Each structure stands twice: as C-alpha cells, then as structure tokens.
Amino acid sequence: MDLMEAIKGRRSIRKYKPDPVPEEVFSTLMEAVKWSPSWANTQCWEVIAVRDPKLKSELAAALPKGNPALSSMTDAPLVIVLCGKKGVSGFKKGEATTAKGDWLMFDTGLAMQTLCLTAHTLGLGTVIVGNFDHHRVAEILGVPQNIEVVAITPLGYPAVEGMVPKRKEVSEFVFSEHYGKKG
Ligand SMILES: Cc1cc2nc3c(=O)[nH]c(=O)nc-3n(C[C@H](O)[C@H](O)[C@H](O)COP(=O)(O)O)c2cc1C
Image (cartoon, rainbow, N blue to C red; front, side, top):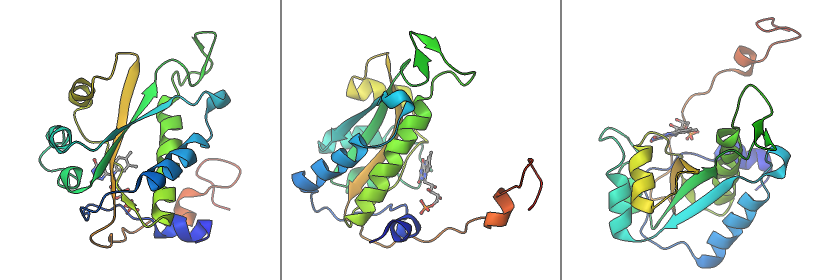
C-alpha cells in the first residue's frame, strides 16, 4: 500500500472482531510511533496498552453515553491510551519557546496519526477518541500529574468497513499569499 492509498483509505473504525493483536504487530506499531517527528526530538509521547477487560470497561465508562466509539472500547482486544509528558515539547530550559506554550497536543497528534496510518497498512482499525473524562482515565490508569492523558484508540481487526465522511474541497482551505486570498 503506498502512502496516499493509506492516507485516503484509513477510516475511523467503531466495530471490532475479538481476535487479539499479535505481539509482533503491536511492536511494529510502537516502532512506527517511535519514528514520529517531535519538537526538538523531545518525543513527549507515552503509550499505555490496555488489554484487561475490566480496565477496558472502566475506560468505556469514562466516555459520554452518546460517544459513537463507546462500544469499541470493550469490543476491541486492545485499547491504546496516548499520553504526553508536560513541559517538554516547545520548552527550552524550562521556558516555553513560543506563545503556544506546551506543544504536547501537537506532538502526540503526530504520534497518533503515525499509529493510525501504520495500523491501517497492517489491516488493523483505529478510531481516535478525544471526547471522554480525561481526569477519570488518568485516575483509572494511575497516570501521574506531570503526564497528560490526551487521546485513546481501540485497536483491532475491523468487523465492518468505516463509512467515508465527506471532506472539504482543497480550494476551500488553501489560500495564496494572504489569508483568505484564493489563487
Ligand atoms: C482529535 C480527535 C478526536 C476525536 N474524538 C472522537 C470521539 O470521541 N469519538 C468518535 O467516535 N470519534 C472521534 N474522532 C474521530 C472523528 O470523528 C473522525 O476522524 C472524522 O469523523 C473523520 O472520519 P475518518 O477518521 O473515518 O476519516 C476524533 C478524531 C480526532 C482527530
């Protein structure tokens, strides 16, 4: 699968087969995450792999009832909780380098995209889940104060094909020379 095919073909998957993710496949995914770009190569990401059904149920309970990814948290054999170390990305000698402050959301986002695309090329499904009670998840998994819980994805073999949500046209988000100016 070439890169464009992977980018266009990856879909959010919300229904999973119970088949486990082989350890070597999991290792390949983590190797891919390892090579994600990050601010000054700070690599603030940390990954918690959750396989215990009881813990997965507790995580599912941290999602609001209407979250369409809720059942995938317990269906999928593996749930990945992506965290970021605070005060590292975007910082030099303890001081924020830019007005944006901590770039951990950006760097963990890149790591998540690497994970999702690589998973897709290996026949696995993912869905990035951001709408949940982050404090509750931190408590369930014993995440310390200096580490931010950012996002979750179930990981496993898709039970259904994801539907293809419509995208904006390129011309709607590309400007030329100045903001708002169409080429
Ligand atoms: C930061 C972020 C948070 C998201 N949170 C959720 C979520 O809480 N629940 C869910 O079902 N999908 C969630 N999604 C998945 C998006 O709904 C999905 O990516 C979007 O509709 C496009 O569909 P596609 O991934 O199949 O291309 C999230 C995606 C991102 C990038």
